[in-house]
Image (cartoon, rainbow, N blue to C red; front, side, top):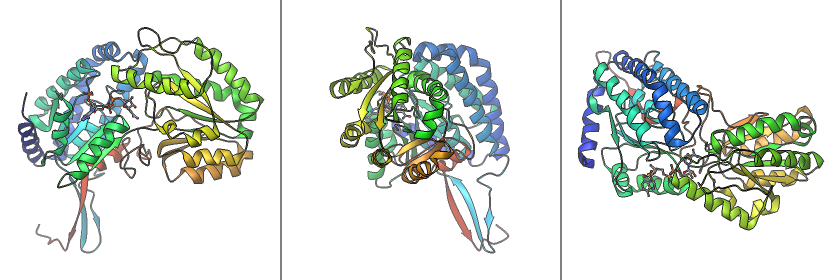
Length: 450
Ligand code: NAP
């Protein structure tokens, strides 16, 4: 096993070499990478299907997204979107510089779009950083395959070989030593709040604290208002089922909390959705660790709250069916455990009978990647009230649409107050994600001859 010191100094050497390579040359590397990835596409999607249990069409859509991210982010090297984007006053000039070698943890749930060649890695490489990638144990064959394509692209484009190093951590200490190495200047992470917080604290306690860009957990509440509900229950139900069950609920924008008015329509909705979910097929969860966390969260909810429907949720292979619990608004407000993300197709419905109760729920919810408000014109004042409560802790506020499906766009904000993210003023999706890995320098009175 290569020592951490060697990995860190290799990353530093590659970082320094990278600074001498023109943006157009670096852009060519991303073009070649896209070609290499296209060549292995169908093979690696099959591989990922076997390792993760995600469906082929889910993985194919994710693959296209990963390629699109590479295309979009790398364009920044050509169109002066950063780096050489110089904002002048008469004697001030602002330039962005890459932050240095960085460590990126691959996410368990997106083997393409947030793993080996995913958004975090590509953001850092486009910024001009070298990357030490901590591969996720949940999909090693897929990760190795993507890494081989990346290595080919590095060689063909004539880039320094260590701009990307692919490591598996034999133990947690190894990963912790990696992020505490003095050469490392930032960390990208997607995972649990518990582990994310440990690693965040370590980064802050270093003699030289460094940014830790962590995406840790979000419940993505969906607030449904009375007038909207009266006319749109059936349309909503279809959208909700799709969003709640997609990728077996293992996405950061999963709608885990659903707030509905207390009325006959809601009783009808619950009856219908229960019939649908109990007929749903069991599906595999991504990893043993996620199974363990799911079982723990499910057991807690069964012990304390009313499960909707009377069907088996976990089978003898540890595959799961989507499941919902009914929770009163007072219970939600008083039970802090309900603020923790349970990863997978699990969630709860909270019925409210007046808007004060709904506001209390919105106030009590912690930092979120998304908050969705379903309202019609006649709900105008209620929409505005909810929006005012959630805007200070939500990265993306959505009207009349579900939170799943995150567009890769310059106007996207994929972040939110803690614990949704540890750096809410940055985004992990869209080209602005690159700005996590650069720092600005102001030059004053720079002589023309420089
Ligand atoms: P995790 O347990 O937080 O692990 C994330 C990464 O950190 C893995 O690479 C893991 O390595 C490593 N790690 C774990 N404990 C560590 C420690 N003490 N020191 C250093 N490194 C450590 O997340 P996961 O296993 O990928 O998924 C489990 C949970 O994370 C889920 O149940 C879910 O709650 C959350 N999650 C959230 C999102 C989101 O976007 N909101 C996405 C994915 C996961 P190993 O693989 O070797 O354990």
